[in-house]
Amino acid sequence: MTLSPPTFLESLTTAERDALLSAGHVRRWSVGEVLFREGDTAGSAIVIVSGLVKIYKLGRDGDELILSLCGPGDLLGEVTAVQGATRSADAVALEAVEAAAVAVADLRALLARNPRLTLVLLELALRRLRLADERRLEFAAAESLPRVTSRLLELAERFGVAGPDGTLAVDMPISQEELASWAAASRESTARALRTLRELGLIETHRKRMVVLDADGLRQHASRL
Image (cartoon, rainbow, N blue to C red; front, top):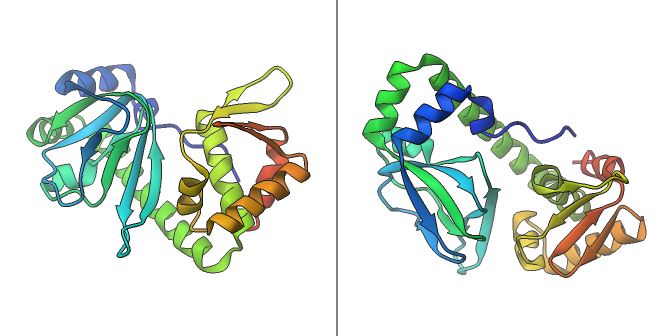
């Protein structure tokens, strides 16, 4: 298990990043506000500057099926925007979000002028395809503990703040029920997994906050996927 890869913006040069952001217009969403719905026309790609966004689909029974959490530096809807297709999932702000919305025509023009930017976008799309394949395999083969551990590790490595003692503290942006959805686990098995990780001394959990005490230990459990 490796640390989280760089975000889309982190993969760009300063000139590429400035060109992309200047090609868009600033959009802001408050907590709980919908960025887009599944089936909406994808008129733009969205580059998150600050805040956190939950990407999810609704199951047949109306339950949320969380696909990912996206934060600063992430790019949303790039493939559908380039194709001029429709959104494939819902997106809602978990925190106040500021982003640059780049219209389809402007994004295509920017990609045409900048082959390296196109390559970075392609690498992002391929990485997401690999991740989707890995998730399908883990949902089919793994027990709840490594799946929950993997999601917690993803949160900590992406959004955690390192302490002087080697810990990682992260403000939990989702509820235990949402964590269960993201890990494709029941609430009961997610609660058991959290209890096990606490008893092993790998994490501490507080109200809307988690502290990773032993990241290597978490990675060992997540590696069982």
